[in-house]
Image (cartoon, rainbow over all chains, first blue to last red; front, side, top):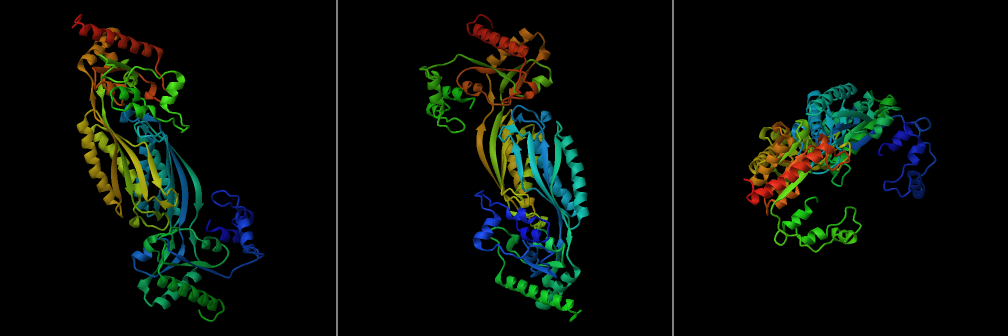
Length: 289
Length: 289
């Protein structure tokens, strides 16, 4: 959980929950036991109440391909897009692939395949992203029509209303697709996660834009953008003026050994970060407007 | 493997291969060790050469819904449809679902979903059955576009040429679908199994039809059909005149606790089997024509 500490600071995640998180693999090691072992369990309360920040600027790799594709150096992040995660379960009837004519089938995988392809088409139409990363089926044999499929659906858009519109549309359309199979399928939705859109602070965004302009000297080298992924700034933005600065990611790859940003781009990002903090501070102090 | 013993008898499967088959679960138990334990390892050679049959009639549940749907009692089986099994591998590129716009995606699951839906459409067009019962993907996380999907494809039709035409069409179409994704996917095919169509012996089919007519007394209660699944008769038909008799399966379900055929239908099947053997025998002996 990369947003864990900021979640505790924002009091969105209880400290005990964070401390008790267990290592993947289940060796009984917890976050707290590791902090103790390394001597990192400090005494400063991780809370926005007792340890406030005046503002928060977060420098991050884009984790997407947009800056690289457009040959730009800095992303001025205006906010984080909304997303909702769902698990869709499609139920049909297991049947022998050789002896069951199409007309007698309730093929859960065929239905799920049509839903996944359809969600992509609707995403294009509504300017939202729909993605499926997990799909499980039963029983899983070459000559058996699957009776049950569950798949994840990840819907994202800069505005909450777009995500909601997409959800409503797909609920309607998936029901239609399920009913259109020769023997009707049943389909059910479960919402696993709901993260509304975050809008960063206009003063913070403003100083990042000014700093990018001052450092790059060319407005074609930076752009305003929305973060596709969640970040610590989602939590800090609830309690102090916040924004983010993006630098290019090679092929948009992240959380992978191939994640890479050039030295030059890292340095440019650090310069924009530093200048943004200084500019913001001077504005607060009334030195510049 | 339900066709194991007939495969050994037909010398299509080596005896040692059959004897060495291990129990699912891997407790070291083999088919041979179980035959010994039960006292069933006999001395009669399982070979069509030393232990020939004059003819083979196999009574089986349909394992499909056709007889039940059409309120019929007996299927006069003319042969077994051809089938080929394939594993299709689709490769794209893993990407973050939130940060990667549609235009930069090589979504292996989206491509696979389109291929599965398309194979069903082409199956309808060519009067063949295309089915997918297994689908695996990598890496399998809600917010990661899958970079790799493999799925099974089972193509069946009464004629070999239809299966071949379907394979050729889908190879062409899957390549097109792979190329049409924003970032092209790669797609590869592996043939796992190839079982050409089997045509049963006309004399055997003839006596089953006559017996069904004699016993049911109503030609609307039986029909000629092609077996969708493989059976021992596939192997025996290589070395002696062979055919099959089908009785209705409730909902077409088989290899499942819900598999069910009524007592009456079982009895009718046994009567047709008995009369077919007697009729065939009398024909061989020249008693009837």
